[in-house]
Structures are given as structure tokens and as C-alpha cells.
Image 1 (cartoon, rainbow, N blue to C red):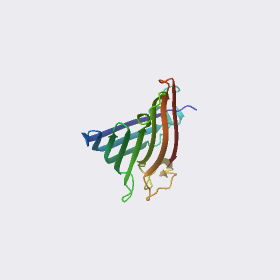
Image 2 (cartoon, rainbow, N blue to C red):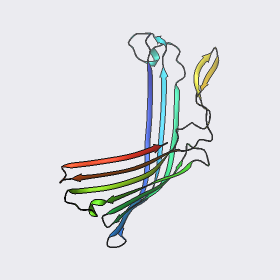
Image 3 (cartoon, helix red, strand yellow):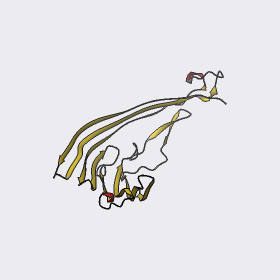
Image 4 (cartoon, rainbow, N blue to C red):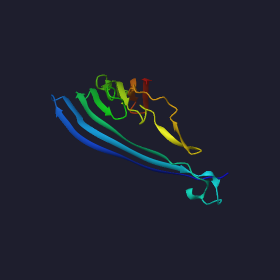
Length: 219
């Protein structure tokens, strides 16, 4: 038979950022630039889900009040998540030939257990412009590059303890159900690692170009 369900969702993301950019020359041929800053990210979520029971009294009238039997209690979900972050980056330019970039970040998450809710990660990238060192007539541009990066991540809310949902009535006794996933009070931050090497270039006044890369990711 027919039925009707309704879900109202309200969610927001608020970010507070404080950033400082810097750039200066170490020597005439070596310079550095980058960013130092911090972010507070706050996510709020509120959802109410309700449905009719045993079909509709009047067909094609889609309203919760048109339920053929008393409706179950609505399913309500609400949470606020917050991640506090500090980060820095540095980009070095050596003689317009070799470039070295580095990043570092530290996050504190509200959805992870105490003692495991602070995690750190970063990246380093290097690039060498070989066409500045080797200059045959057919070579327009040639670069080799390498990169290593780690990325951390937090968890969804309500992963550390049991929570319960209203599941109707058995006579006059209210019923509830819990999540199917076992809560984990030793939950760790997500972590992914990636390594990449590659080369790219162009030949014969850009008539021929190439770009090769090898990468490996571990989560």
C-alpha cells in the first residue's frame, strides 16, 4: 500500500580562519614563501524523520496526519562536531631550477576518544627542472618530481558509545533499537599515505609532450 514519509534536515558548517602569508629572499637566488595559520571548523546537523503507518486513509493525500494507524515516534538526530587545526607551509625556490615544498598540519577532533583525538600529518614535494641544466635543441621543457604525503581524518559522530532509536511499542511498552555497529572507545584517526614520482616535458617546440607518473597509496 501507499505511505508517506517526511524528513527535515538542517545543517551548517562554520569556519573561523586566521592566516598569515610570508615571502622573502634568503639570497638573490633562493627565496621562500608560505602560510601559517589555524582554523576552527564547526559542523551542526539536525534531522527529524517521520512516516505514516499502515498506509494512508485518503489516497493521494500526502500528510503525516493522513496515516491509517498511529505514527511511530519520529527519528531525531542531532550533533555538533568541531575540529581545531593549526598548519604551516613553506615553498623554496632554488635558482629557478629546484623547488621544494613542505606542509605540516595538526588537528584536534571532538569525535575521537581522549588521547587519540590529536593527529598530525604533512607532505613534502620536490621538483627539478632538468631543462635548465640540459639544453639540447629539441628539448623545450623537462621536469622530474617526487612527492610524499600523509593525510589524517576524523570519525563520524556517535562512534564511541551505544545510542538508541525509538522502535515503536509492544502493547504499552516502548521499544528501542541500537546501532548495528559495535562502538569502539579505542577509535584511531584515519590515516592515508601516498608516494609519487613522475616526469613531464615537451619536445620539438611543444609538438610532442609526455607525462609519466607512478604512485602508491596506503590507507
